[in-house]
Image (cartoon, rainbow over the protein chains, first blue to last red):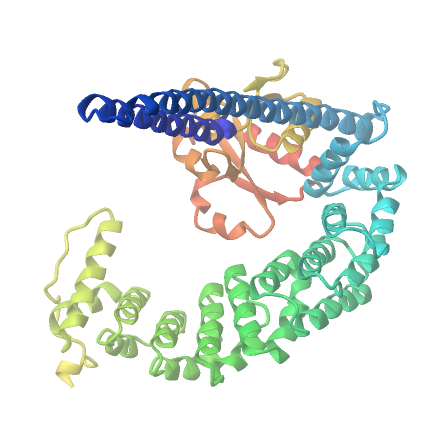
Length: 414
Length: 125
């Protein structure tokens, strides 16, 4: 019923508007006729009565239509839910106990089978896939894709079914769809292939060739950045090869998108390719590469110098990521982070202050900075960070006085 | 909310909006002799938890009425273990809440492994 609340609300709103309009017409008429009588008043009455009757009838018809539509929607949804539950029971009984199915798979049965297949791995999942083929649905989908005259919507539905099915026999057909003239079909094929290749246990050679085919299609510029990122995510482990190829030879926008996916996956893989991009002339790529290092919490020792250099990058968002990455260096460059507390960019100052907390005596350093740093904004951020840290640590009282003389590297004492 | 007949001391609450998956989870757990209670959305699960304390909760993340992790603070963690079910690629959501759940499985999942995980969690309670 919850899904029908917007429809019901819309119906009530329409009814209210109709009623308000009718009342407005009526009020206008009454005002004209009673307060400002004039010679044409008698001829206005029939028009007003006719308008009111039509308005009232519209209200009734509208409300009846709304409630009929609501009832039909609710009934259809309930019916679909019941059929899905029945097919789920039937398919599971068939898969686990060889109980015969109640009949041939209809549309609802196929959708349920595909949902189960998509959610499961192992023997039962494979049995469901075999059933899909045995009942003729696989060959039907492949025929639909092979026929040039198949309408776009029907073709899209077939691709979606094959994406859920994860069937090696359908991969060639989906490959062909990567060159379809409709961008929506190409995008669906890309995602269907990524999903299938990511989850199927293909032979290494075949998996490589499938991924390289996807790379070719992506390089042809036929997909949006979001679609490429989704493909990389759906490919899972198999996406490493695609990410490798994209980082090496794709346009900068796709390289940045790939770095974004790697950062979200928090993976330490492909570090060699990522580290090369730290020296890219494109600030987006430098920041993206640093974000991958930060998210994986791994900054290789041999890139420490580059990371430190990037903390002086002219672009603020690169400095921000470099400052975050510096906190993962061993040892943490406390002196550099101290300087960065006075960066003109607030986020860099904040990252530097949080980075200092990674140092063994970080709290003491921040306490020093809160009173001794030459930059007033640095003192502010040190104080704020300490306060937040203190609140997190069971709201311990904050002491801003240094416990011993300022450190040798503090700018005020050098 | 649907409750299967009690056949085992362990009770498992399934919080899953997808009927096919919920039916599958209930089917395999019932076959293993576990009592199952089903909830299709977050409010339904919250209502159940106000009066009952299951041994294990199998929790989906994307639910009608809110995110599955919103249910975690309302669970008595000393008496109830939580198995989070998450779609592939959503593991990053769990990284931020490692202390809030006892175990997690990604979809697609193997039904036998699923039953074993639930049984292990029930045994720990």
